[in-house]
Length: 428
Ligand SMILES: Cc1cc2nc3c(=O)[nH]c(=O)nc-3n(C[C@H](O)[C@H](O)[C@H](O)COP(=O)(O)OP(=O)(O)OC[C@H]3O[C@@H](n4cnc5c(N)ncnc54)[C@H](O)[C@@H]3O)c2cc1C
Image 1 (tube, rainbow, N blue to C red):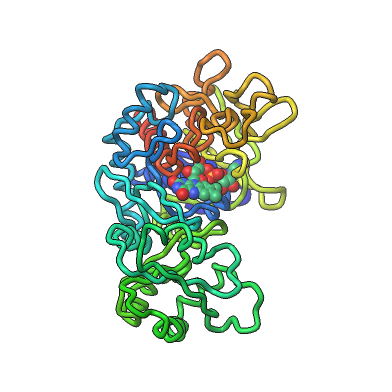
Image 2: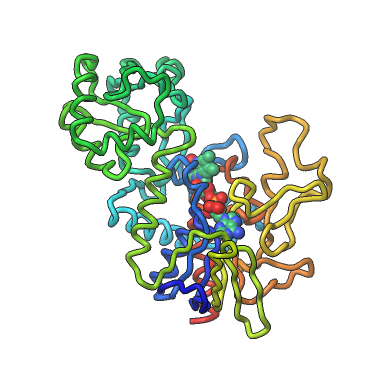
């Protein structure tokens, strides 16, 4: 599909928002043979760790090794949760499709069927997750064995501290040590950034120089852990060649944002999706969505001068929450930014947060969002679908405190699949 300034672009489906939910919705829609416009920036995926949690914690404080058992419990106790309208089989199919797509395009992910795994965080704590970049999956195995391991750090890398991790995990992991070296080519620099180091490691010579600095520090280490910056476009190759040079298992530990695995995800998704001619990806933000009695939508994206008009049979709203700008907090309440759809929210602003910041139940504001029907169509105040062809997916949905339940990407992927399925059921 090609964009032309004058004529409206015609597509079966317009997906608004190119975060995890929007990108996955585009993947599933293309697999169904639909023509798709994917509109918007994918900025917020840069912040994500690259881990794809399915369901790690429920109720708050209770961790699960079996995510589908946790989801079954959520379904029975929280019928409004987005997972409640999707079967485990569909969730599994959606994850499998994403795993296959990422693997086919050079970003393989590991996943144990039906299981969560423990992963080391940059704080030195352990977290339950489900689908993980292969570079981090190696770390899962190292953690299980607790073999002698060296964690590397780089002078001037301010967002990550290997010493922090060893100070927390060292008590229960004999043979865990850390070391800091200057990253090749950063001599004299006070601060270094993960994105720059990652790009530098795409070059073979940088890896050789780095391995040369690490080898004398290894003692009896059987594995070496790095902050997640082992290559930007050549991460698999970088891990493989460092393993060869060091002669041990090499793995990555997720870092706080901005996150290299998040950037990799975005790049691979867009590159892979764009290979399909049925997709038109527009970086412009959508400014207006109009729905007509004919069932069609007219969508306007961009600023004057670069204005794009789109006509489609259906729309999937995947614009995220406050960070993504799908929701906006105002003095009078929480608003949906694009169509002013009703938002489920606490009755008063004073009730957005519980009095205690660290209340294990979380804060009501984090469960605010769009109420949808079983077909993922946003509802009006009178509980009717806003428009037959309007669907919503991802973190904009109500009743899901994903940071607390550790289900962020899982919900984004599964609801994207369910929204595309609902669209196909109606229009194909
Ligand atoms: C710091 C951080 C860490 C995370 N860590 C994890 C983790 O460890 N495990 C995990 O499973 N998940 C994690 N996630 C969550 C996950 O990556 C997704 O952000 C989440 O699942 C929600 O995705 P989404 O697509 O619904 O929303 P978002 O990611 O917010 O994407 C919404 C997109 O819509 C776009 N948009 C908004 N309005 C418009 C408009 N009018 N027109 C066009 N585009 C628009 C925004 O620019 C944005 O890119 C993390 C997220 C963050 C932010």
